[in-house]
Length: 268
Image (cartoon, rainbow, N blue to C red; front, side, top):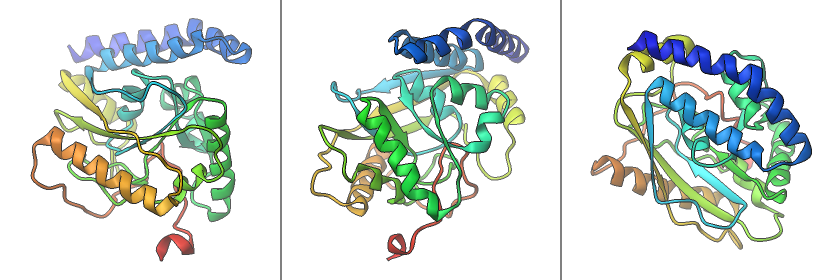
């Protein structure tokens, strides 16, 4: 079965390069709505080929744009979320050139930015604001790292600063992600062995629970980060049935989060 999954995965990627990439490029350049169906449809296909069933619990608010705030377990969080909605993510610049992950990121219109520099925070947040002003939905993983999924790490307020100066309605929505088996991608794990382990396991369910959106008006980035962290923790407890979500230090930075080191005001 894992060999069949691997064969289907390779076939899907090959077909995407031949057919979807040109179609998506034209659709995005001309602003056609089919670009969103291409993104979600392809991500659903990839989830199916590697053996992940995505189960949404609740939904995003009806009106866009939505600023989605989620815990982070694995690179598969991105395709799981994008199989439900045509979302935009942050990723470090190097990801654009990576096999498989780079392709998936480009197909979804990911915002590529350098990571690890405080001077880039303002520019990154401006890029997020531009996406929201265009009416598109944006996702951040404010833990700044992925983990084994058993806990929620403290949320960093850095990219909540992107909401400052946003004009118009905006739904800030918490999301909790939980897998029914260990799909965590953290520490010194490499991509291809992790992908192969998922294919060998198969039959994994990814639960995606959407919380209640909050009104960001009148709240600073630290207040928003704290409120979103509490809501995501509560949702994750509901999904796991555990009485408490523990914390531990981050093991490794995620490729799909571009958190810079904390600025002096974030440490206060």
